[in-house]
Image 1 (tube, one colour):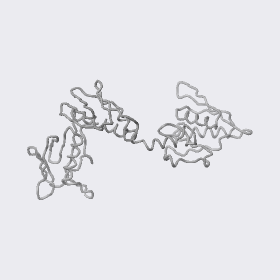
Image 2 (cartoon, rainbow, N blue to C red):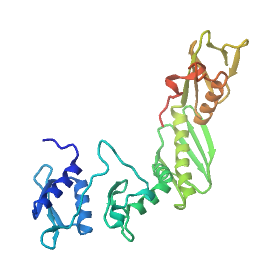
Image 3 (cartoon, rainbow, N blue to C red):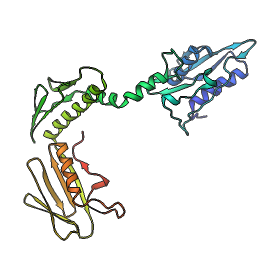
Image 4 (spheres, helix red, strand yellow):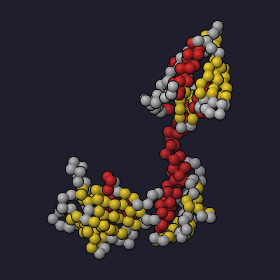
Length: 315
């Protein structure tokens, strides 16, 4: 028989074995079950457990614990978060089992741990408080630690906090926060931060992302595609000008500049491209504002294709 909820199966086997006053109980092994069993041992609810390898999944043998004439130490086991109904909680709202006398075993981003009894190193509350406050910054700092590969044909110069990237499509230069240390080592660009303060972690990931976009821009470039929708709406390219008929009494004209190139492959499509991702996005937004979408009619002069503007080069 296939078991769909392996954790509920573990709890049921322990519960039934205790009711029958068995000394041990066997369950199929898994990393999560091992972690749960270790917590039960640490908290004094079972005597111990052993893992037997069989070349497949393996088996866990749990030695149960009794007191005062075969009275089970564990008074109750309850599965709260189930595969069909997940229960999520922040650190402040973690459940209290028997008003704090029991233990809640919780799955977190840091692994399986208890609900945070005072002084416990395996405190989920302590971990979640830290994780909840720093989650965004930690994500950015993980991005910041990734080296940026310099493709062939790309030249990168770092002068203090100013970075210049030269490639087949052009040259980009930008100044960054002087707190960040930027260096070229071999074929990689490395960004390091001076400390683990919140601001430094945020700047770390941001700086790395902006430099990466510069490298992508001078090699592949960025583009956004706008789709023109509306009866009688059409666009055409005339020299460096984009001429748009958007239902007004007059034509709307926007022109290319040294950073932006405009294409109109057909009467209902606008393609805006360039090497600077920020400028491409800003220009596309300005074109879209010439005739914003009407939310109740689902019409627009420059409604982004597939509901949003598409970027040509992936980050």
